[in-house]
Image 1 (cartoon, rainbow, N blue to C red):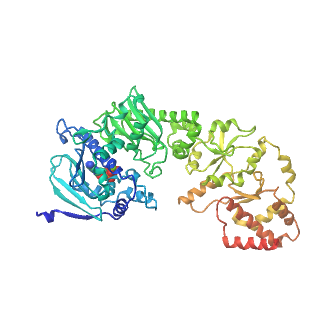
Image 2: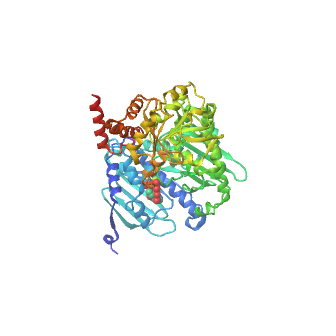
Length: 621
Ligand code: ADP
Ligand code: MG
């Protein structure tokens, strides 16, 4: 084979090409993170080989010390990052660096704003951190050899659409990445600058990082240190490393558990939502170590998915080092760790909720919706989780717990009332709330989509059932209110209302299930509710949007007998020639449409709605 034939040329997959264009032209000021990403990959590669060698000791020579070396070619203007980790073979190179679509590429591109100073610092969170090298280099060479294989490979690219792969020599397993630095990135060739960057981002990396034979990092697993000897700064840095994020940890949970199964956990609750929080995979990101050997980062068996916002590590010496990742899931010891960790974390959250409710409210706004998934998925944790759940309510601007709600229930109130919808501000202004507000009966305002699901699974709390105020009759009469307006309401119930109800029923025909006088309205003339036993309005809306339901349930139109419009319409409906009253007919449809609009929906027929509205306005003017 001659050299020309041995060199293969490939095009970057389209999205990777776009990503490279953006990264290369980025004016982002924090370009130094390229080194963090490359060191992080080198460290991952050492972790992988250390793990693989557990099963196949022949993969590494006896006494191999894993490590990462940084070197600078002053003349050639290069930075060289090498490791003696697992390396890559031809196919892996091709797959990971260029051609196969990485799901993270698109998500990363989407996350970038439109302005010039695109914040690429989160690139690592999307699993495409390697490409950050092109922020500072106009050519990148990767020489790599996979542990257990003989051939070395050279991957090379200027980041402009294509890359090449050819056979090469490498003395032993591992990877060497050479960055040919851009003219405007020479600052990174300075010794002091490099040291500073490594200290800042990579001090806690578990393998020695050397620069000209000097080890720069502490290279000790931070979680094995005594908690009180770890500074907040060190926590922050380790958290940044494990999360590829830049926020501060909101909560740090570091402790050692001794018992049937012993383990150490160093876990962080982030301040802001990680990028992939709502991706369908619901990936876990807590790293599992056995005796300081990294095992896996994405096992769903270490923590329940409702805790997927956590970052950090769990290290146990009691799990068997010789089990494969696949066998882990059936290890009863891991199940023990999972259960005790879950309780510990929920307990720490509870402490925060009680001691620092304002801080907890911030946590809740970022992660509450995820925690509530646990109400459905982790039955054994249900009661504990209900204790740490917080809700918006009509009681005040502050979040409330369910116990606090219970303390405030009125005499005769049998239910915990809630109103569910998609938009918190919209539901706070819903007409359905009027009667409850008037009586001082508190209603929980549920605006997360997960609310519809847990509430189907949890029938009651402390003996009170959950009841949607948009479904079934409002049993407000049975509740002792703050100010007694009941009498006034009864007076208002005029006998002619029946004629109006009959007239509206005839007019609307199949468009509604029924028309009834309302107990829940005070200022709005109408609202729509789901009949007892029918599917609640918001749940139906959600199922439809997710394509899980077609058609729909007919709703009940409730009219407010105390409202002036309704009173006047009732008088008209009671007249002899009411059957020919055009305005009455238009009003019936307009009332239905305004009830729909108040629920955030469109009128059934927008053109007809406009025509009727105009006709009523004309007659008024
Ligand atoms: P991530 O690290 O999140 O997977 P990157 O873009 O940083 O994403 O790296 C892509 C992949 O390239 C890695 O998953 C790994 O398979 C491979 N890779 C990168 N650097 C190295 C290295 N030094 N040694 C071995 N494999 C590497
Ligand atoms: Mg990486």
